[in-house]
Image (cartoon, rainbow over all chains, first blue to last red; front, side, top):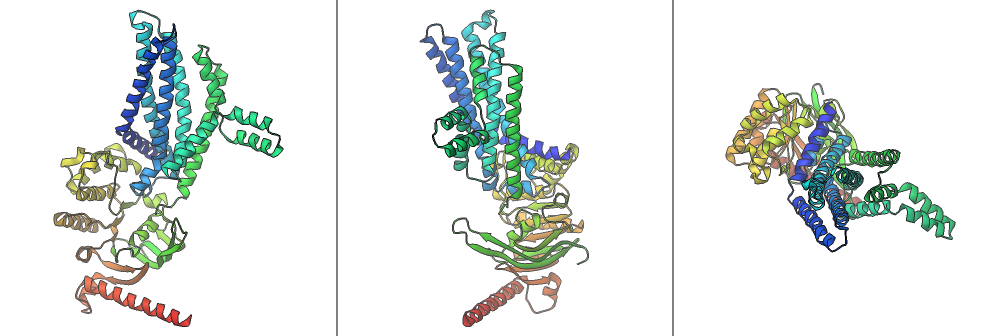
Amino acid sequence: MKQLDAVQAIAINTFRETVRDRILYAFILFACMATIFGIVLGSLSVGQDVRILKDIGLSAIATIGGVIAVFAGTNLVYKELERRTIYIIFTKPVSGWQFILGKYIGLCLCVLVMVAAMGGFLALLLSLQTGAFQGGDFSQPICELTQQIGLIYLELLFVTALATFFSTFTTPVMSVLFTVSLWLSAHMGDSLIELGKLSQNPVISTFLQYLFWLLPDFGGLTRIRAQLLYGRAPDGEVITYLMSYIFAYIILILTFAALVTEQREFT
Amino acid sequence: MADAVVETTNLSKDLTSNFLRRRARILDGLSLSVCKGETYGLIGPNGAGKTTTLKLLLGLIRPTSGSVTVFGLPPGDKRALSRIGYLPENPYFYSHLTAYEFLDFVGQLFGLPRAERTKRIKELLALVNLTGPQDVQMRKYSKGMLQRLGIAQSLINEPELIFWDEPMSGLDPIGRKDVRHILAELKKAGKTIFFNSHLLPDVNEVCDRVGVLNQGKLVGQEKISAISNNGSYRDLEDYFLSVIESASRESSQAAGESAQVS
């Protein structure tokens, strides 16, 4: 249990550090303003105001959540090195995996709070829009919204793990580039397969196929999110598979990050 | 050596520059041992390799060649680290934390129970005279206050072995006197202390033995009592300068001879 004490301490410290960063609140404010803009856009449509508000609100949560995960994640280890606070950690009985896990959990908690805050604001606007406060039934839409935000958070957990991994061995700028590239490529798995089929060259075709298997694939996540948007609840089995897939990837990435940290010299 | 808490044999460290991949020898064949209960001061000019030595002892970096043990264990071993207190040079801590939060964080890294942490934090804040600003975020601290806090965090686990890198740096004369007092108390409690410093009067006052490091080599090692008693040197400063000068003379002679041979 002592080992988990260190993980908890590092997680709380990372959470405090990220939450006390004022830039974060500027991002949240931006997300809220973008969501409010959804009301204006919705009012221009014919009977689609709720749908537009929901779409824009969810996009704002996904984008701002992603920005927070990428920028905070890619600075996670680099900042410790730059400020030399890493000496304080690794001169105590703390292993690489405890450090990485603590940092990751701390940042995920912060992202959770931010996503929940933005989600709460969107729910409030939606309830005002649908007249839920005047006695309308709001349980079904809130359930769908929670599921959609849950899927966004699931993806952000993966992005945070990627950013944490890259931050263990490269500069923040390079980490941002690598993280965003991999994140985007995770949404292009189907395109890779299609490209492989179209290619006349068997080497390129095989290479693209291997690349597809190597890179994470978020095609399933996108499909479920689209289903939810049209009010269709996804199959429980699919959700379980998707969660297992993403968590397996996260564990793999964090294991690599811990190995890199363990091998590193802190000059 | 019997009772040796810290032992290095022919310890060397090369560092490679990032850009040209040029290797530079930072530490060259360092052999020393520090006994239980001893206060050892490692002194030397800037860039002599003092901080590198401490990093090697703590396992933050790995040796290029040679061996090092702390409590008979390899450097960086968790069992050894749990018995060590370390103060880095020019400590930069988490500016978003208060002194109390920071010490609590460090205590948790050692796995100390909450009640013990609370007790130790109170004692340590009083020891380093930081009880007033304990709830102020560290971003508002002066260099001296950060140094005091650094000293406090290095003692949270009641370490048997203390590694301090320039503990007097950034402190005013009163602060230095306080640190000397803390060192004296720790010495009385039988702790083994290993520290780097530029401030020779302070080293003279608290150390049992000193080692002089110059250009990565240990060029002299002597007991403080022997320096002051044998009459060859006026004081520690005189000893330090003589040792450095003779080492520089020898190295320039050796460089001249190797140039003639080639």
